[in-house]
Length: 94
Image 1 (cartoon, helix red, strand yellow):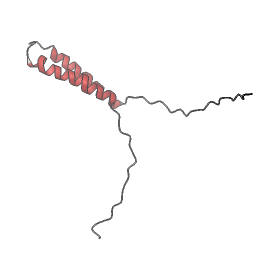
Image 2 (image 1 turned 60 degrees about the vertical axis):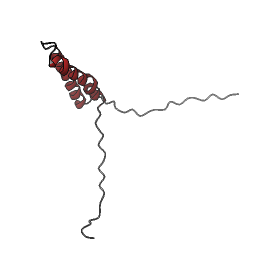
Image 3 (image 1 turned 180 degrees about the vertical axis):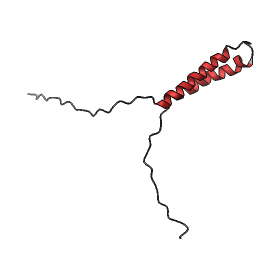
Image 4 (image 1 turned 90 degrees about the vertical axis):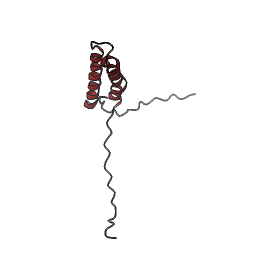
């Protein structure tokens, strides 16, 4: 006859959950939001065929939406690694 074996549940160590965004991420996202708002303000300037609505506004909007906001989402600080100090022989004594 076949033998029935009991399954043993393996306990996994849980690590405390950390928030994905840091203060620096929120600052970058705020700068991106400010850039987008400035782009829309420049877009609403009175002479519709002027430099601000036709040149500056699209540059600010593309910069905000396509560069700064994704950078703010993807930004992650580098983890500090222990400093490795290599001793070099003193060449003056040689």
